[in-house]
Length: 70
Image 1 (cartoon, rainbow, N blue to C red):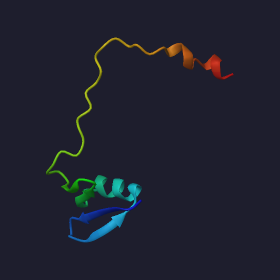
Image 2 (tube, helix red, strand yellow):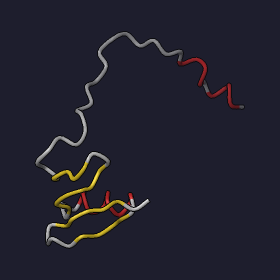
Image 3 (tube, rainbow, N blue to C red):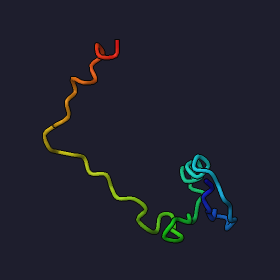
Image 4 (cartoon, rainbow, N blue to C red):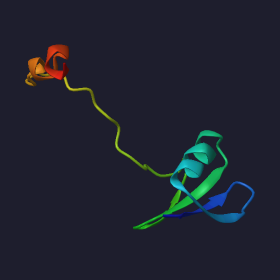
């Protein structure tokens, strides 16, 4: 699936997810078209901040012990 983007030099492209990740990391993307419309990179909140969980660990870690996979 190709994602429409506008680069910082105003060139409009459709890129793959991997190429988009590279372009974002190198700060070459000005805008990305999402389902809800165009998003300005750096100007709008794209994803919520991940807040670390501070509660008691409830997962059973014993299920994934190395002896299980032998």
